[in-house]
Length: 519
Image (cartoon, one colour):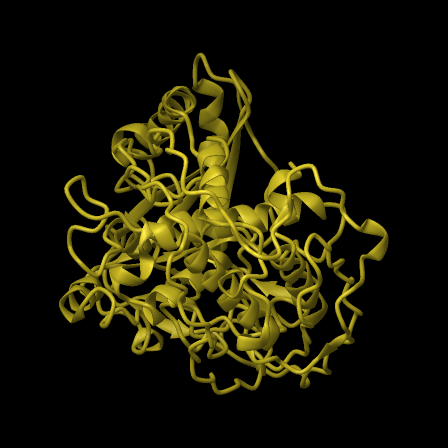
């Protein structure tokens, strides 16, 4: 979900980062060592000017016209791909269990026989490792090494083995869900009490557990507490497309949120501070659970709790406003699912309410703490639950696809690289939401279920990797619902970090993803 910690957002700037020129694959078994990106100075920014509401100070940035979303050039599909075992659809209902249930162990697939694959026990020519060439222009992706072209060593069977290790076990899920549900329900009852300003709040089930794409361990949960608000007026902040100042169209005396209105604006900072205070006071009253409140994170809309017994579990609680009215104009060209899920589905989803979370916008060298950011976590959950071009995709009596498996593998790849380079700052600004957004775009480009057959897992995973690499090289990852908002803008993530991640992913891709076995 977009409310996860570390999801800072700013204005998009012109893309155009240099990208590594990829050389032809080396001899069988040879590793290609990545080079760390040379730090490139940031381009000078225009002088700060006034922007947004006259009630809030800020800096005016010249907005770049968003470029068109290009379809990445991909190689033709290869006949006779390794058959991967079909994974069972997650069985545990999100409302009751918080997480997906275990799937049956996969049957062994066909043996992999490919040029360039490593033999078990074979010695690696480590002393002959060579770095990739220095970054030049964005390459033709057809020339880049890929699993489809026979240069990768990971086939569908090995990828399925990785997925088996990532699958959450029912016993772990049940234990974690019981503890989290107890804490969350206690807080919900307190917020709904008659003396609370948040007495209309309800629970909104979103995030990777409810989307059935959580990996590794049930130790992190996202919970949204939704508060329906009367009709509001949104004032775009600095023409950002994603950040807004919120006003009530009518402010009757009985509105419990009136105390949070400051100079006509619904103050995000005042509401979040009061929300945090209630939770901080109430966790002391939770029996049979050792819960503490973690330090407030800059730019994060979440109140983070740490449950320390019986095992450590982190819970992000996010206050969310629900506006039951037309989506803002910045979303007009977003949600491009017409060819994928159908025009009727798109129309129905756009009739759903949209949400706002208390997220500070960048304001020069500081933050504008009164802004709210658009959130579509509930729509993302619906898309992942109903992801097929055919209505029976991955149902008990339907044909299975590998869409969710590809998303899990992409999330795992980023998570493993962040673990590997945890002592550096190059990867701090990247999060699973970037991976999910890129994945949605790939699904849009390849909408048919026939393109996501389980036997083609390695082909589809490589296509997702290829698209993500393209976004890093061009510094352009459009928000799926707000196409004018670039998640890879240099205002949000510097060029050197994108080059570093691009080089590391290319190295993993060329050498059979050794990072999958390192942790």
